[in-house]
Length: 321
Image (tube, rainbow, N blue to C red; front, side, top):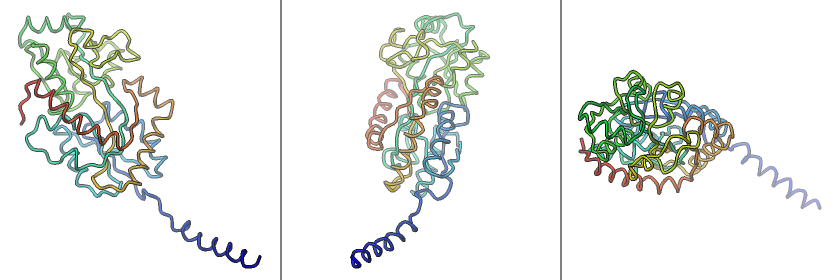
């Protein structure tokens, strides 16, 4: 009996140092780098999710907006950061489209990041200034063809998913319109509502408040299905362009070679945030479709998306810069 008690007591003593010396995975604030200005769909999503994500990892998550060059500047900064879990990047469809626009890239999206998990899908839309005398995508195409070069069509940035979506629309519609790019979604929407551009290809999310106020008008959702909260807005397929499907998504990645425990912890943080009913409902209200993924699913998705957007760029006749 004495020997058994001694052994049990010794085991307890031996266990104590392991408990006392356990270290948290995240030891300081995590910098979350975004490749675009505040106010867009990705920025809105991130600022909704980060309070719940930081509760999971036990450290603040600081959003760092770095717009410019279609995400090349921000992506390069994260690709070169230390792989210690304290710098992460909002990977978006624009990063998938960028290799189709640029001859040289400062990073390889398939090799220079460690996938963590996808967060939200975002449908694209074709929107117009309400004063434009058209009520459908077919009418817009006919109007543009009858007035070559008279219409401006806006998108944000150069070399991102919205821009490629606009160029693909122009090519598939066979309508001569002038593409005008803007630094951010708010700037594009202001120009659209003012009539400086008459048409825009943009994510649904940042447009929804302006659609409700009557400042802009939606003609079509460029997705396989109508959006749940906008049942009266047809898809591009229903509007006469069956092959025009353009959707975006966003995800989190770390620099390459980030240790697996950090990846798993941040993936849990994503799932925790997206499992909050209020967050899911709010994302849908704002034009997003929440859908978390595993790191492996995201890792398989990235090269497939790069190839798909490359094919779209060829169809649009995009020449690399």
